[in-house]
Image (tube, rainbow, N blue to C red; front, top):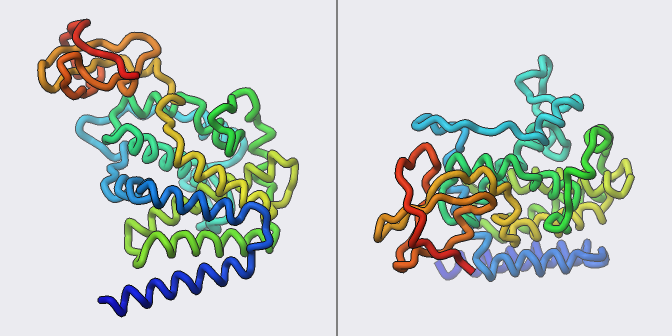
Length: 305
């Protein structure tokens, strides 16, 4: 076992040194690697991967059936000719480094899992409405690493989708992106099985979409290495940001119930479950959507700091 560990450690050192020797001259590369290590040290990578392992696709939960909101971003993509594969007669599996409807849809899945990570629980129907009726996807695509202060719905128009379809990769940027992704995933996983592969592929698709968006924001038809660097900076910023305050709170119309004293509190307008830390009795809180709650008692709940 010690020999196997030493061999893997040596392999990681080798692949890391090869990457550094080839790309150390590129501005921002060391910053990306430092951010990656920070997320590692804070156990954020492990926590996010655990969400993937336990993930239950909200679209496939039959009991009770969930009413999933229509994403305005996906609707806008369709309107601009970016169609789901089932609507394309001659559809062929596209290269992962190209952008299609599934790339945009993958971003929503990624944000759902990230939202679940920050909530510390599985998503319920109100969570999906609050997330998908927010402008978070538009913030991410339009603002990239400044998404948390960007108002996406003011800037993403039809021209954005038309431009993103015409963006192509510079060959050096494509090589850099593939090698950087391989380096990071190799450090994350010793072996890549089902969950590890899904995790890797979904992150890669998000990076590809962000790189395309970076090129569009630069008014360029080509993705260059600088766009890839910006895409990874944006990805790590998104993962490291508590996105719970960026959702649309008005869709939380249910109740908080204390697990200890069973007191109910109906959420008011512009309140969300994660605004509250505990009941006044010190008990933990559980959120129930309005259709699952028949009683309320507007007391006993303390709002968190």
